[in-house]
Amino acid sequence: MYEYLTGLVADVTPAYLVIDVNGVGYLVYAANPFRFNSGEQAKIFVYQAVRDNDISLYGFATKTEKDLFTKLLNVSGIGPKSALAILATNDLQGLVNAIQNNSIGYLTKFPGVGKKTAQQIVLDLKDKLGQVETDNSLVAKMASNQTDPTANALLEEALAALSALGYTKNEIKKVKPQLKKTSAATTDEYLRLALKFLMKN
Image 1 (tube, rainbow, N blue to C red):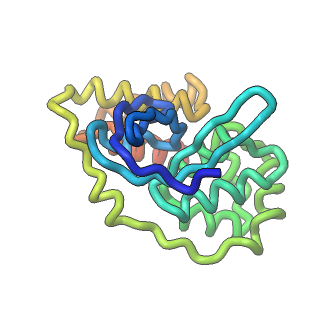
Image 2: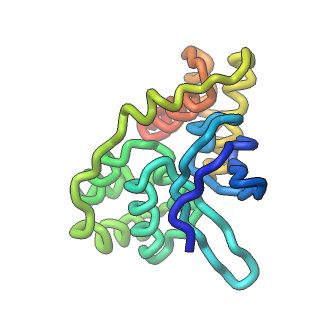
Image 3: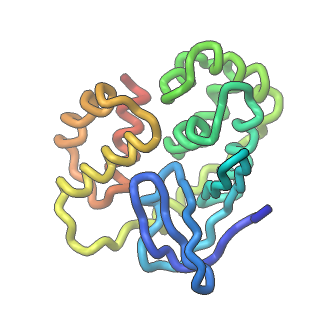
């Protein structure tokens, strides 16, 4: 079992990133791959999922995110894709508060999470989560250095990332006009804004 990978971020896509560790490229699924910059060195905490015919790696910027991911996987009805979608908002304290305060409506806004599953999350995790420190310095440190892409291209990448997380075409269609009215410098910023809009709708 891997704890983390340290290497060069060789590629970033809406669903995953590739990290080169001493010449070996690891494909790592991530809640928001655009938090990482292609061409930069990164330390990524990873969870290895082994199924009958598949071995996959899931990556996180912090140990806290990885710990929450593993706790979510222990909930009946939550798989890796749903767990990633839940963590994509990057509001870990908000997530913990929602679970501890039995906020079923908040939890059902995530793709793949119905009322029954949301209730199960609360039942299973309510007493297992302590205070979660959100690392705002990490967000600032990961400001993108992409080379002059157009705002439209960044927006389209963010929308593709939403699709990879499991949001429906209709959900994405609803937030697209709101995103077009905003200005963001990176795909990461557009994705964060989109997730905020989705949680408010």
